[in-house]
Amino acid sequence: MEKIITIENLTFEYTRVEDGAAIRALDNVNLEIDKGSFTAIIGKNGSGKSTLAKNLNGLLIPTSGTVFVDGYDTADDDSIWEIRQRAGMVFQNPDNQLVSSIVEDDVAFGPENLGIEPEEIRRRVDKALEEVNMGQYKQKAPHLLSGGQKQRIAIAGVVAMRPEIIIFDEPTAMLDPKGRKEIMKIIRELHEEGITVILITHFMEEVIEADRVIIMHEGKVLLDGTPYEVFSQADVIKKANLELPIMVELGQRLREKGINVPEGIIKEEEMVKALCQLKSQN
Amino acid sequence: MSIKVTKLNHIYDKGMPTEQAALTDVSFEINDGELVGIIGHTGSGKSTLLQHLNGLLKATSGSIEVGGVEITRPGVSMVEIRKRVGLVFQYPEYQLFEVNVAKDVAYGPRNLGLSEEEIDQRVREAIALVGLDYETVKDRSPFELSGGQKRAVAIAGVIAMRPEVLILDEPTAGLDPKAHKDILNMITEVHRRTGNIIILVSHNMGDIAEIADKVIVIDSGKVVTVGSPLEVFSQGELLKSVGLDLPPITEFCNALGIKDTVLDMEDAVGKIVDLIKE
Image 1 (cartoon, rainbow over the protein chains, first blue to last red):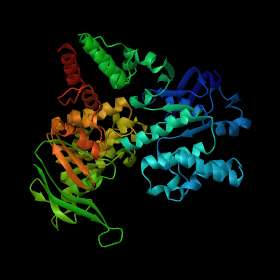
Image 2: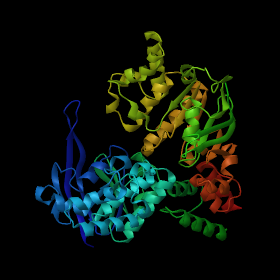
Image 3: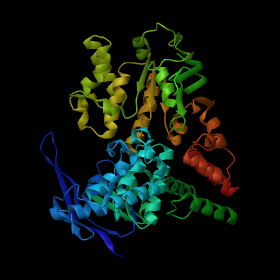
Image 4: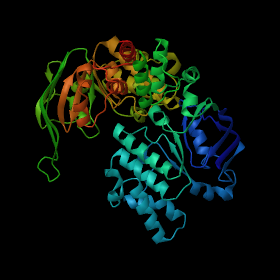
């Protein structure tokens, strides 16, 4: 599998304002991300997951170690445009990401800065807005839209840059359940189109959609694997002060009561199936 | 101490082309000491309702009685209403501004014109109530605290006003799972220790099922149904029709064909064990 991101011995330190102490937010992280994959990164606040995300498109530069995006070193000043074009980022607060007073102008902001021809920008903006189902809103003012709609505009702005990778840093944290579902649908669709997705989130129901889960804890990778592999390690996850997906928790409790559902069930449908099988055996 | 809302109406931009009814004939009662959850999708009128309960918005018609005082009557002073009803907005930590935690929490009580002694006592009490250690945090800048702690400090600022009714609008939004749980525990603890009415607005149905005594469902500015969590979450179809979900565990048990409405993990485990073994 082709690697689109390679992280080697990444350490990142920042200086705490109050006392000038060096705080190590990332401690010797090594990871490779496959092209076209869907990776979820979880961890409690302060675990280093957002710092990691910001190191993936050169918003932060490693204190030591290297990050390669599609072969470009993020520490190399001359590569920064190549990297930003390949790896787009969507943040938590939709209100902080929109710059224009008209939706389509906002989406055009990125491509304009890439120096793309006006006709091509037009095509990209229209297509990006269609992809997030916001085509009918292109002449509207962003401040009149809902949180979920604003966040979709922010995603369209990234999509219009035609990135290979999109890093979502808690994109649904400030949205209501409806907005969250809208955004997760768009993320799934972008992944199906071949975009490499990195999703940072606290919501377990979003994590189980990924094909790889990385758990960050105190600046290090604590667990890394398929959702099945990672959530089989319930004790490690609880120790990191994280919650388990609801079906994993239920499975564990049922096994304690002597109901032998298989370990590693993370989705509802699988649990219903397993329980129906057990019942028919009785 | 109880709350009685009777035929409350609110029309935005009355008489203008943009006229819009935000609340229509909203009536409900909250008994002394109840922890009430208000649910409804974005734009359903929840926030408009909250703003009436502490006098931020004036009703177009109808009345709100808090502890026997009709706060919708002309001439009732805003200060009196705010003393009784404390409202914690969404993301209240954005409103922190003082140099240290103790001063931030003292801001409200100081505006009530209380003595320094009384202010100090209330600040200590409020900080303890939200689960923080007064000596540890009092001199720290609120901006140095974690997300969950900042929010706890902001809530302490309202609690220090000693309101008889505490309203929290989405108090757990945007927090990580640990901080989420801490804030939820803090709310039940404040409720247990003060015995006051707490009104909680949340999109998290699991949280509402877990801690509320009574649930009010709002849609398009109207009360759709009121009842215990068990009564309300037994009406899955009705909730879906107004754009709301059931708590995940309730939904799952329904999918399994369990007849009774299940509201928590403990109950789910018991019912599933019965189902398999029967």
